[in-house]
Amino acid sequence: MPAADAPAVTTATSSTAPAATAPEGREPLPLAPAGPGQLVMTAPRRGKPPRHFSDLEPGERAEALAALGEKPFRARQLATQWFERLEDDTERMTDLPAASRQRIADALLPTLLTPLRTLSADRGTTVKTLWKLHDGALVESVLMRYPGRDGAAGRNTVCISSQAGCGMNCPFCATGQAGLTRNLSTAEIVEQVAGAARALARDEVAGGPGRVTNVVFMGMGEALANYKAAVAAVRRLTQPAPDGLGISARGVTMSTVGLVPAMDKFAAEGIPVTLALSLHAPDDELRDELVPVNKRWNVAQALDSAKRYFDATGRRVSIEYALIRDVNDQAWRADRLGKLLNARGRGWVHVNPIPLNPTPGSKWTASDPAVERAFVAALEARGIPTTVRDTRGSEIDGACGQLAAAPEEPRG
Ligand code: SAH
Picture 1: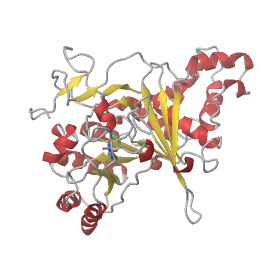
Picture 2: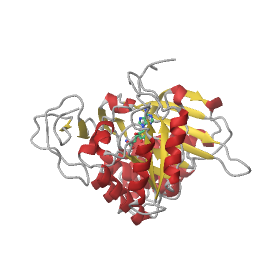
Picture 3: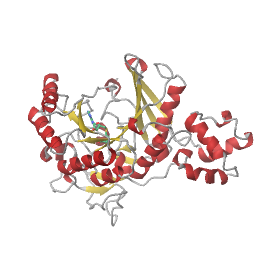
Picture 4: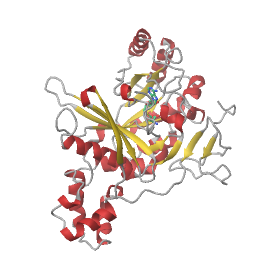
């Protein structure tokens, strides 16, 4: 760990750059020489992915089609085909003039994501896809189907990536260990969901035809460090068809290490999605180690911001807490967490303990089941709703913290 009391922050572009460009909504960050164990708040600049229809706000689309010599009303037809019918072959978009289809495809529907490999588990109801981006960068997304019980509708959740790699350097997370390659564009984020929606609609996933009901920004990357693209993607996912994919905002969860200014800005966007805060420890001493960004925004500041998010949106916040054996799983820490949450009000929050998923080279493992139960009981004793998250996908390295986008699987 760096000895300085402020986290060592660097731009990955160059350590000699005169100043870091502050990401949206944050103060400029002090620069320090690049080195291991550091936070990277600003993504390296790489060749931009080509512009895609999914990057465009509804108001920008008519102009984009007009620039191709098409009538403005074609924008809505194309949106209906792309987002509502999930059609990705322009030759089958028969309401568009045959002579225009290829031109529209070339200009507005470039292939952004190419599937390199899919792995499945749970009899095909958990599917992890490794995608190659236009510049060779790799990301992963995971589709998880949860059948409904007693006649209730099931859920289909897509866990998506917002960056190739991650700059937050959490030591228990495989993505964090690999560092940050680059930010994804809006369309690169949206198309992970569209890809899953297409596979479900076409009955290509075990469990019968279906639609995406939930999206969680819990794949690779810190979405709020890629603020503009991530928020535009949330809008595209939640805009009603045909403007967007028409997924209910209530089904979308934005997960963050606790970038407080970005959380506050996100609260003001007026999109009622769920916020998840990766806390992992109630005390700054341990959280400094587990979530290095804590040295910039500590436990109290992150929790205050999470509460403000609830106050602004009415959406109950999730506190994520990976249970790591003998590191953060003591009942006294659960009790301390319960106190901190109750000090900020009642009914605004619930806790999601996550049994630690193994990552290559990590010395840590999941807590003993009895210890996990005692941790949950201590929270419940303080009246905090608590749900242990399942470890879906762990056998295909598709569970929380396991996405490393290695071209070869590290094991199995
Ligand atoms: N950057 C976002 C998304 C990360 S992944 C964030 O930090 O919130 C979603 C959750 O999985 C986070 O809470 C993350 O801390 C957690 N996680 C990371 N590695 C894990 C692991 N090995 N086992 C269990 N959870 C892990």
